[in-house]
Image (cartoon, rainbow, N blue to C red; front, side):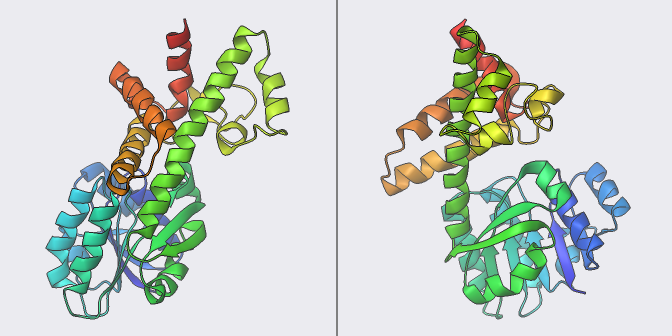
Length: 296
């Protein structure tokens, strides 16, 4: 059993912390939301009165927070109070620069602290089912220590490289996801105009060169993939607002590094329009309805 502090018990962090508790670890959590704290208690997580109280006896600290500024603020608050030799793992999706700053903050404590940036892919369903993919950046020694803990929350844990590499992998992956979902949605809209049924197009594309995760696992039209949000009114597994956040992070990284990403830029613009039209709380696959509107 490991003493774990988990800061950020929202839609993703709550189920992740619950899975650690279910695996037999002693988990102490903290969140600003009383409702999230109540749910965590019912899932076997002890709830502390503050972030500092949560980390006081922890061997491993996990943070799952909205943005880089929140991660840096929380780490600044807790680092003076953590025990020597503690491992800090940030599972938030944030900009690469902030991730690297967090690693530096831990290293500057000079108390043998280790750190990882380890964002996740898999959405709320993956968090609940412990099927997430973790993309980790940091020293190999820190990764080896973290892997048994991360594996209780996910099915795949990949060491991507040194500090910031996990965040780099995450934003590249999600740029692919945003672009591919738009492509799949446009294909279905075109198929509709040409008289193709959704099932016919799915049966062809899912076994041909058009096959991709956005089609076979997360199909944006009702019917072919019963578990996709399209069959549940586009209630979010991964909200459009979060897709836009990740696409913006990818564009910031592209600008900073000088990488040309024309399709990534176009995807960011389309998701910005979709969000601004009032759909930030819809699943990101719901952009097919926006595309239908644009075409008609």
